[in-house]
Image (cartoon, rainbow, N blue to C red):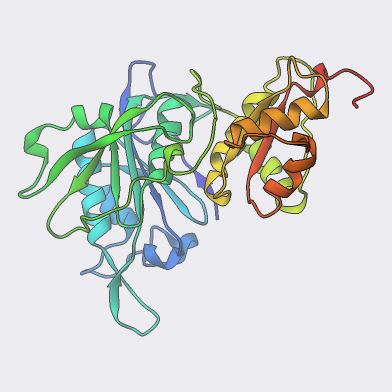
Length: 318
């Protein structure tokens, strides 16, 4: 089930509106206390629905998917309070025993961007990336959002602490990330699932990949069925940015890394093989060429290789 609602606070979002997004990623719709199609249903007096938790703090759910929940708040404090309640919520497990269900939460605050009544843009994108980076049971908060939380908004024993700088999957430069801590919440986590967690040479970029969700979905679906996928299009339409974003999104599926090979200036398969061997840390010597050795080196590897600027290769390609 997927649904969208308009800007929830009356009237239209203005460019100067600063809001906070809370994104929840979960593996099982049962975590919501109801099927995803009944997300707003009452789950009982002692266990309010997720919609009830959000509404109690003045927020709104504006979109749901099979594994993700999108919420928006006017300020960061209520979003943090809702995140805490979500983490402490219980659902009825298969055995009939109520249990906590691990969820990954991301919070980010910034300027509202609305197109035809639907939230879009960089602020929402960043919140999504934080949720994707969180470990099960973890609440990650951007530096921008953390700065907007007044001390009075935090309940007793609740702390927002920095855990380090990380590159998220939007390919932007590293940024300081915070975590919500409380004695009743899990406290020990592995490093966030950022770009730093898997080998790669994906470049630092200065812009978000926005408005390409459909193309990213199509590309990911093709990669599930084929080992080789070619992206074609006129120059400047964003082929490279799309490929890089796809690599970042799928980084966790390739334990041996995602590697970008720039083909400009390379003239044959030998030079390409030498470049790739160098990226992977292999030094080539002896009588065998890089092109001969490379298939053996990567045969048992699970990696993604992005060849950029293929149109610059001379034809015919030797």
